[in-house]
Image 1: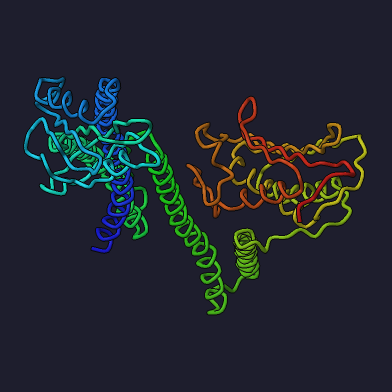
Image 2: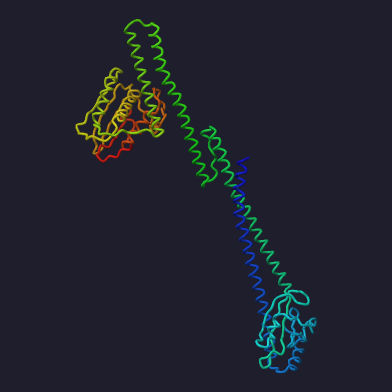
Length: 479
């Protein structure tokens, strides 16, 4: 219900804003059109009436007495003139009273309108147009009055009058047509906006619903992509996020299962031998020694696993740091090799070491972290490639880089798994013991030293791990 209200709010705001703007534009357009058309029609009519009035005045310009004016005006009014059926011609005396009218309806009346007053102004007689309501009928009219003068003084006036009923009716029709067109445009805009908003709101509603399902634990679920636009990009991003969360969840579950198994195995061995020895079931000294050796070995393995988990925890929450000091890189690697050499020999694995004749200057590094990397990779080489019964270790210098290689002769890593081997919790198809976070920690350590950890398959079989570390004095260490 809340979601529906929210999207209705979006739709309402969108429609209100867009339709509101269109309505304002249409009203402005209709108003401007109405004013422009009204001004055009009224101006055209006014100019026409003014031309008629001025023409009539010019026509009577040769008559210089009132009697002559009256005599000829009466004849002119009674005869046909252009537009007689639509326009009333009036002859007014100097007092503004109508003496003659072509319609004969307004004779001997005094309209008293501003056009008559201006035309008969003794100081400034002039032709004057006027639009308003007829004083006698109340009808809207347009009138133009032009003075007849003798020696510059107005003695009479000619007035043309026409009704505005038809013009106003035509204006109303034009405004109605404009409003109808505007309404049609408004409806088109409304439905197009409604479709457009729906094309946004419905996918967003679907995305919201799917994200809620993802948040509730339905990891890996995908949203159907409908359009290749911004919403499509958002859909792709959420689908990718869902897949990544699903992968992370699967790796987490596999990690928990793997760690539980890894912890259970040595704990079972420790508990079993400890109870056996405690109960006195083993009396032979050799068997006791063997049992204690297993307990110590499995306890050491548990300690290593716990340390590995702690390192990963520090890495995740940002407490992973380096203690930088000058380090003899070659000596540190040799110590790790010789530490594992005897251990591998007992396992039937031959560890060969190829020394470098080049000198390595002291580098700024964390010796404990580097030793952790060396030991972890050597341990992995025996764990995953020990079936080849041989491991090669070497160190050499390439310009300002120290290059360390560790190679086993086991089955190697499937090509499709190579890009993921440094991903946390990833164990691939290997059945060997491990938590799946050792290489992720090693990669972080090497990276923070400004180096690079490269894992790949060697020619002729087996896996080869290459560690490249800067040995230049200007190397930058991230702490």
